[in-house]
Length: 198
Image (tube, rainbow, N blue to C red; front, side):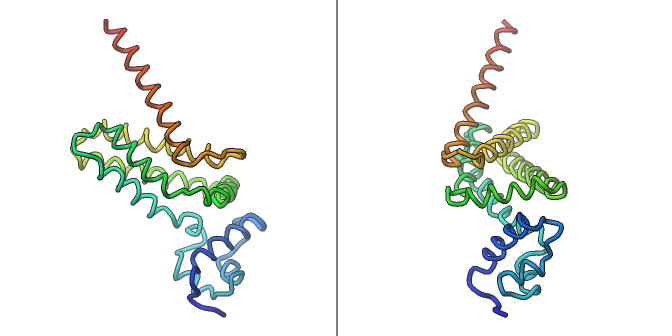
């Protein structure tokens, strides 16, 4: 069997996704995935801790993008604008060519409750990391948590829209639209509150 071939992690991801879609996640083993690309099961485990992580391997890159976007904002940037920068940085992780894979991956996740739970855990982890990034910049704890969780909600909704059938806008464009909706909503609520106080 071939070992350590160039692009092995990517080949394993593609093979795993195809097998999960065809046979089902529970019915597919790490050995099946390895065999389908001509490597040993041992090689599979050099790249991924288990078959589930084949679907979540990009979490580190996504987290780094969020943190990079948040930390690169100027010192006096308001919290929601920091979050907006983090969202724009994260959008770069999802080029248009990645959309078919993202759609297929999501279809597999939606058929498996354990994978759905892992996806929710990933989003919660992103929110916690973004919250800490904001707090490190001196943002008050409650404000940091509200801004970060709002940002992750925008991210999740934008992702769902981006992979929808017929959607052709870039991930960045969908994210910007979703973020604008949030800012419009919060601005309207703030205006109503001021009117009530008056």
